Image 1 (cartoon, rainbow, N blue to C red):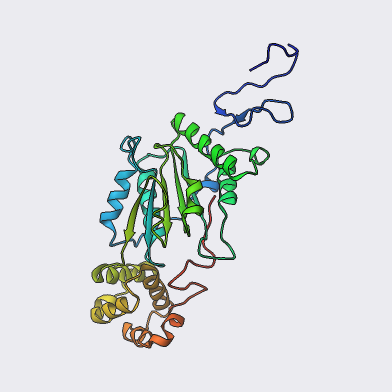
Image 2 (image 1 turned 30 degrees about the vertical axis):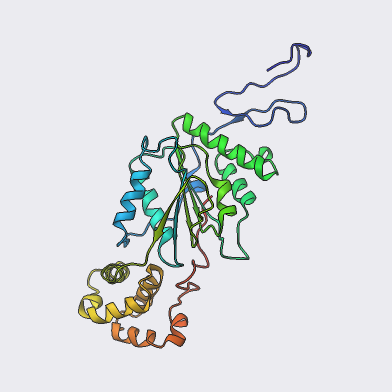
Length: 311
């Protein structure tokens, strides 16, 4: 607004359909115009796996929680999926987001960021995460403040503005190591849910609902191994059906963890003539099991070294 005591010829900017941040920048008001749509390349998430299995109950629960209109003002602002490394936390939230997106519940898009919370070399600070997300939301870099709290306020304001315009957004913060890394990424708006994955429960986050992800049961673990093999080698790969006892023992040695089972399936797919009994023998030595359960830089207790970050 113009100060009536100022020169009436002063050039002024108006704020329309955007986010107003900071009253003055170098003596001028600033207008931030939201883009018509978020660039898919910046907001796309990794594709969900077609072999997903064994998580139907928690999957349906989380999908229902994202339904528009279900989230009351006092409801949880975030859902934290916690579990062992390799338990399939990321895959679960990708499945949830994919189903919700198919329903058209998030016309504004899905923001996905891997925080690398358990990788000391690649850990993403809250400030850096907010900066990336704000830019993905269409705010030019020159308007992104340096201060963490200012970034958080701008981020939440932009998300709320998208929601006001009917462009509801889902935020996924993957691999948060602690409360402090995840808390600034919450939206503070019941229309903008946030899905967080962590190896810890992150009980210190206010207004969040915790979901503990257990290991797969034996039948689901074997089924995942079968599906992975069939996807890699086609439906004619019957090694799991031909040796069900070996498959169960392999699943047990993998701790019923989806990532370990996928690595085993990939190793078996590399050698289509290799029987499950050979893999079982290879994994039976506990001293060398972790080394056996590796392929292409991927270990069963951590994310792939080339994991995708879409922000």
